[in-house]
Length: 68
Image (cartoon, rainbow, N blue to C red; front, side):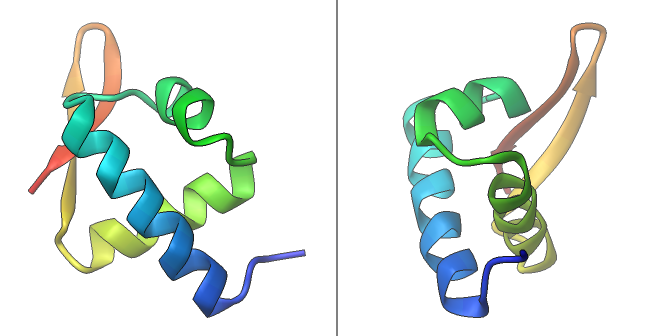
């Protein structure tokens, strides 16, 4: 079951706080830091990306997220 809009907003705030504290986080690191399941974390990241609050970067080590 997908989270509702309010849950996504709450999860998004938690995720962005973690990215501020730990810049250049990978998905697995965010999942561990936030304690969110795959779907909830994905929805939060999509929400933040759509609102231009974070950006997705690529390196030889993989994809990571940082503040936009």
